[in-house]
Image (cartoon, rainbow, N blue to C red; front, side, top):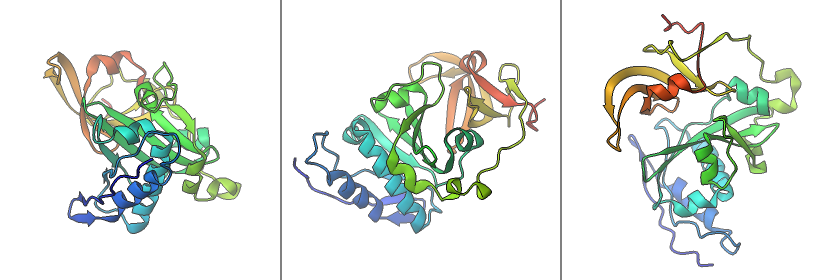
Length: 258
């Protein structure tokens, strides 16, 4: 296949300017162009936190490269159907990720579609290396079967093993299991400052910020909405009815509960 022209793009994150991350991804994605996969774009911009160190940038680039190689539909559609790729700093996994898949480190990634929808992925390494797709719409974007009950979908990906910091191999330093948590349904418990969790795995999703009884969506529909600060830091309006009627939960010991 044709490699096309590689044009490293300057990536600005606050006052930090990076020239290397997009070039690394472009080279890595195009390296296997003789394989029967859709051609990769010449450049992909990754928005990352301003405080990212050089080591963080290298880890993010390697993880995102592995993810996009396993999900060529997003790689090929970037700049067309997909308009933004955002990655958080490498971080400790949540309890459900450490317990369910033996992860010791993870990278959270968001991909924005041209219709405004945001796809959510968590890349992790440990016992079971792979990608968690938040909501079935995210898994289906990569051609993976999504769970119809709204829970996370796990897609194995051996290349994520590099994220394992080695603690899984040593049971003496394994991630500890926290004490049992008393959960309550979000219905009747949505207050400013309350942290919301989703699905059977109680995935931390965000914190309630504000309410709007007459919020108008991008499609012109009027809804009762809840403004949520997502775990990534982004602010999103969510349909209150979807939260009340869906598998959303809060911790009984949340200090913001009334």
